[in-house]
Length: 163
Image (cartoon, rainbow, N blue to C red; front, side):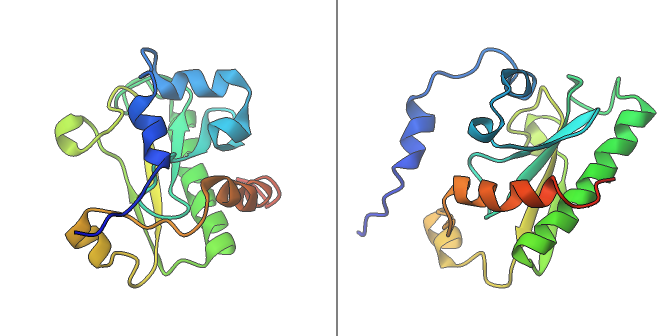
């Protein structure tokens, strides 16, 4: 048997789990780089997934705490979609992906990892990005350190003509 080392996962395994909602707490800390927050608008923000499915995996999150669309104003819903579209454009400029998976999971049975606060996942995709490693080894290979990806994306998301 071969061993594949992923030491960065130990931080998550050993870390104290948040009692408060992660998506409510992180934007209030005003430590955007450490929290991987790339972009802020009035009603939503863009954050990188700390444990991504693929390089450049982003989430668009409303500031309003809700597990579904309930309680989001029409303005917030509109901004949620506009910032999702904008994030896709920015990822395209940064990484030239061949496609995207974009999705929302409501409820644990639907695959929501943080079910108490809705968010939209944006995952850039390339031909062959899911190889035997994922299929057989249940392992993902992310080719770039997450802070390097952050440093590439931050100026793009904050300098293009935002919505």
